[in-house]
Length: 145
Image 1: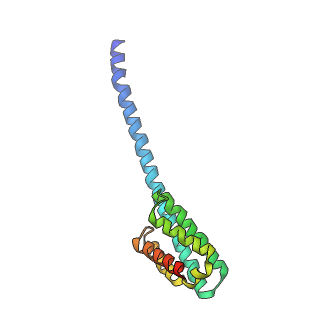
Image 2: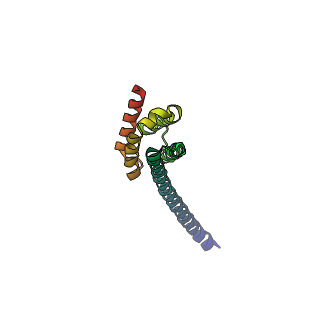
Image 3: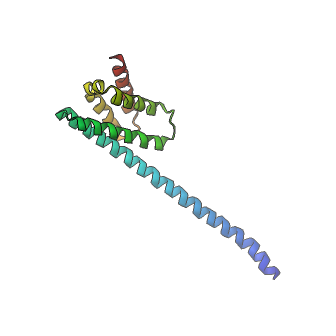
């Protein structure tokens, strides 16, 4: 009986440590998969927004502009999930631009080619610094009008 207690006092902690390690690895893999899924969603949203704005630029269809704005908002939401920092300057610049898209659409439409240029960078990489710099420049341009 004494041998069994000694044996159990050694084996049980080892089994618990192994189980904890398996759970930690599983959670880590889940987070990695989730992060990759969010990056794919970010990229697809920005690509869809760019496509809608290009279509708007070529045919002037208001529905294309509205769809582009909606896809841009989806990109912003996904970007926020990836960065988890609502005070991030890049997110703030996007939020300002989104405000212009909804409150001053004519000014954004007049500068649609600048918007498409910014989105091209973000289509390459969801957090490309040049894309955010162009968004900030566009915000400043619209604010000055």
